[in-house]
Image (cartoon, rainbow, N blue to C red; front, side):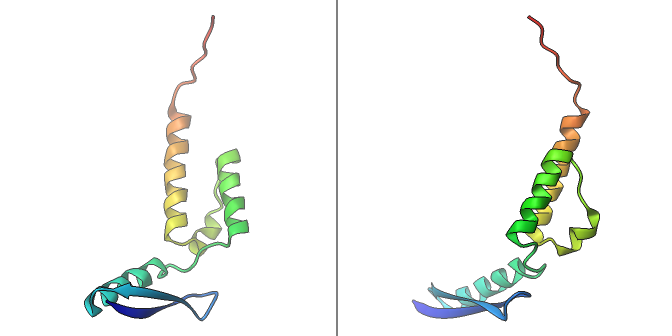
Amino acid sequence: MIKVIQRIPTENYAYIELNIEYETAEDAFIDHQRLLKLHENGTGLNARDWKKVRERMLVTGTFDPNISEQLNHAQRWFVNELKLALRGVSAQDPVIETD
C-alpha cells in the first residue's frame, strides 16, 4: 500500500487535496486521471444557484439556456434527464377518474 496525495485543480480554489491509499502507483495514476475528468467541466453552479435552477425547472418546466455553460457534468446530466421526463409527462393524455 502506498499513500498518495492527489491534487485536483479547480476554478474556485487552487486545488482540492485528497489523501488516498493505493495498491500500486499505476492505480494512483488511473485514479488521478479519473478525478481530473470529474472536474474538467468546472465545479458547476454553487448550491444556492443550483437549487434555484432545479426549483424553476420543477415548478415551471423552464430552463435558462444562458447558464448551461456554467453547469458541471452532473448538473447537465440532471437537467437533460429532467427535460426528458417533463417532455414525457406533457405528452401523456390526462386521465380523469370518475366514481
